[in-house]
Structures are given as C-alpha cells and as structure tokens.
Image (tube, rainbow, N blue to C red; front, side, top):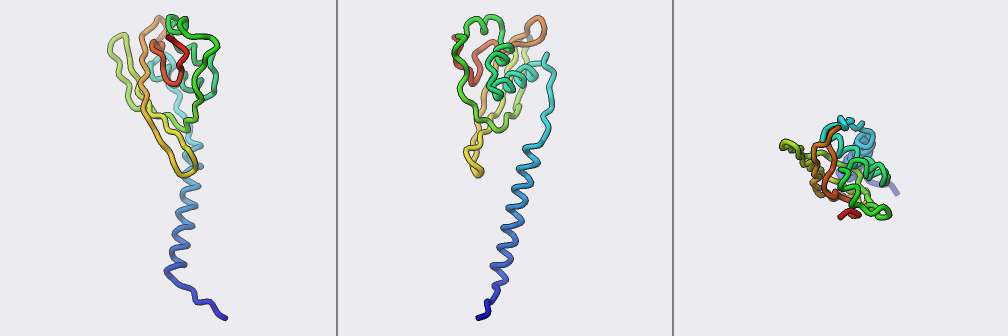
Length: 144
C-alpha cells in the first residue's frame, strides 16, 4: 500500500523543524553572551558585583558591597534566599548627589518554555572610595 504525502503536512513539519532549530541556536547564543563588566566605583558596578556574589551564593562577597552600618546590622548566620535568576538586566540608574537607585529586572526560567520577571530597586550612598548599598537589598533579608 502506497502512502500519499500531503504537501501541507510536509511543509508544516519543515517549518516546525526550522523553528525548533532556531530556538535552540538562539538559546545557545544568548547563554554565551559576554557580560560587560562595569566600574566597581560606580553605583551600577557596585550592584553588578553584589548581584554576581548573590548568584554565586557567596554571602561574604555580597556583604562587602554594603555600607559599614548596614553590614553591622546583618546577622552573620542569616544569608539570602535562594536565587534562580537566569538573567539580570540593568534598567535604570538614578544618581542624585550622594545617593543612587539602581533598578534591575530579574528574569527567572521555571522550565524550558516559561519565564517570569520582576523589578528590584537597590539603594546606594556615596562613600569614601565609591558607592555602597545602604538598605537591605533583594534577596538578602538578614539585616535590620
């Protein structure tokens, strides 16, 4: 018995295969994109270094970006919550004299086909050698 090939089904199969390959290639390229390192003496650079420490689950390195006063108010045995961010995007930097606010979007993939995101505001103040975080930032909840 000979099979009749339906041209519409065949074209649909080809289109789906091309879309699947494009999605895989796009994912690989996006995951290999290099991060631009920001100057750690700037508010955005401080936040980048803080969030890098958070994503590396390095509590001590994260605390180094806090003001001395904020650091002193943190419980030493209480770290930050688990972070499953797949990407953090710098959205906005606002500097007003001796204070700054950095707004970032945190993107989290829950599975290969879904993602959600939310924004966080991180507050900083000018210090002798640059900038430091002066309010308990996301996702650290061990400071008063």
